[in-house]
Every structure is written in structure tokens, then in C-alpha cells.
Length: 439
Image (cartoon, rainbow, N blue to C red; front, top):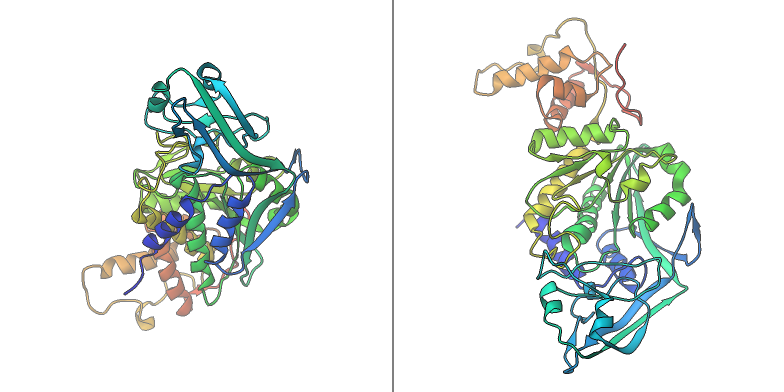
């Protein structure tokens, strides 16, 4: 029985969910090693605290042994072991008794979502704090509370991982995702598990025309450091890039374009969404919020887009404990993976076809014209003739597909058939530049 890749990805997310992650620390390492056991060739890197990355420096490493609050009657609440969201990210060590009034200055909750634990961080300002549900916070009684945070904030390393799957060409498609959020499924784990499944699928190809780069890094500082080390190579080789985030629910699809909104990646992603899930929510780069901020920034200018399900910041469970394993599903993950596979297939096969002969070729003697009229046979011939009508060497398959009203993943089969029958001439691969307007 064929395995369900959606269920496999969901099982990976279940395995990873309880690992506490942050910008740095052992949780990130455990996550990367887990992924590395499921995809070949993943190289894990350790970057020392203080290492410069453009205008930034790698922060201190943060690990937590335990953290909790003891109520006046001895009940342990906001326990990090129960849910790492209870502790404000990068909280400094504390072990002291405080009044409820003082404790309130260090508590975070969401009055509009009384049962949710918020996700709060303080990466670059030293402080401590706890997060709990508004309902629990309202029930706190006056008295003395003991606050215990046994954390280690000290020079160490930031961990990230990458791999390259080489193809015949050194021109690359980049897939980037982040591994720095604790206990969240859609906003955190859906990206890495889809990236892992996509890398495994690409690794199974007997041959790849393009090369593929996968990056798993802490959001913002991780991508900034990665770009600082690979900028020239990324700019020289990358023809399309995708940020994998928020891939797992089934409420909607969302699209985040690149900053310039006109790259090959923009065209491929929009075409796939328009053909296969046309009711998606389209955003502009003004709505950005993930690592496309870095990859598309001036001076970097990579062609990065995002095909998402419910977009970050746009669903009520975002950055709360409600973004849990019940919010994502095997089907949601599988469907998002399939859309990215369609993008890959188009990128692998895109070309600017050119007809070999003036006027229409004789299709019948090449076995391209049906000898028996059946439902669908007329459409097949129309697709062939329409492709040939626009095969002038100036239009790529995406533009032709949109002109003649056929999904590009379907037109690819027709294109290959016409190449095999020597009706079309082989054409150069599509390069980095967007399809420029014809004069």
C-alpha cells in the first residue's frame, strides 16, 4: 500500500512539536538532527555568538532547564515543561518571591482569547516573563508567588542547516524555512516538514535539470547570516525562491509575492494558484512578515515568494497555543506540498518553444491527429495547434499556457510530445530574468 505523504509529514510534526525551540539552543539542534535523519545530505552548521552578519551579530545561546511559578498555595503554574510558550523567549534566570502586583508586570495574556497562551519573546533586551491564558490570569489570588527560571544565556552558537541537490545546471531554486518557534504547528512546523518532504521527492529524481538549495534557519537572524555568507552565489545562481511557512491548515490558500512582483517565481506561483485553487487570498509585499523580508531586500533582490495556507498574522490562532496539531492536518500539508511540486515541474520544464516548420505541420503522419473521434480528442488537437500557434521562441510555456487556457503542468506533456515528434525545436532553458515584454 502506497504511504500517505500527508500523514508522514503530520507524524513528523507530532514528533517535533514538544521540542522547545528558540533562535538558538539545544532544541534547534535536536530539530535539525531529526530532519537530517529523514533527508540525505543535510549539513548542520554552528555559528559562534558575536559573529557579524551585516548589521547584526549572532546572539547568545539560550537554553532552559526549568521554569514555573508557584502560587501562594503551592500550585505550580505556567510550567515550561507543560508548554514552552509559558516562558517569554530568552528570559534571564530568576529565583525570587514576588507579590502578585509585581508579578503582573511580568505576565502576558490575551484578553480577546481567554483560553490561549500567547507567544512572546525578548531576544535582544534582557528581561523575564511568563505567558498564560487570560482565564488563568484572572483567577490569580493576592499573595506571594515564587518565580523560578533556570535558564542559561551565555556565549554559544546559532545552529542552521542547508543542503544542495545538484542538477545538470548550476542554476538553483531556493527553498527556505525557519526552525525557531516553540509549540506551534502551522506557523512553525508545517514549513520544515513540507521542505523535508519536497527535498526527499527531488532527491528521488533520476536526473534534475536545475539544482535545488534548502535552508533551515532561525527566522530573521538565521536568514540574514546565511545571506551574508552566500550573497554572491545566491544572486548569481537563484532563478526562483520560495519561503515555506504556514503550510498546514485547510482554511484557505495565500500568496505573498516578491518585492518586485514580476519574477519567474511570481509567475510560476500565481499560475499554479490560478489554475488549481483560484480562490486564494492575494497579498502584496507590504504584507510581508517572514524571511522574504531578507531575501527580497534591496542589495539582495532574490526572487522569493510564498505559497501558504492561512497567512501568518491573519488567523486568530497565530502566535498562540491554539496553533497546535489540531489546527493542521495531513491533507492540508499534502495539498500544499502538491502545489510546490507543480511549481517545481514547471520550473524544470519551462522553455520558449519554437516551431520547426512554417505553417501547420502534418500531424496525422506523426500520430498526433486522432483517427477516431472521442470525447476529449478534439481538445487534445486544439491544445497541440494552439501551442504551435504561439511557438515563436519569444513566449515561454507559462505565458502560452495562460494564453490558450491550459494549466502549464498539462501543457508540459504536449510540449514534450511535440519535441519527441520533432515538430518543435529544442529551446534554451529559461534563465533568471522574468519574461520581458516583446517589442
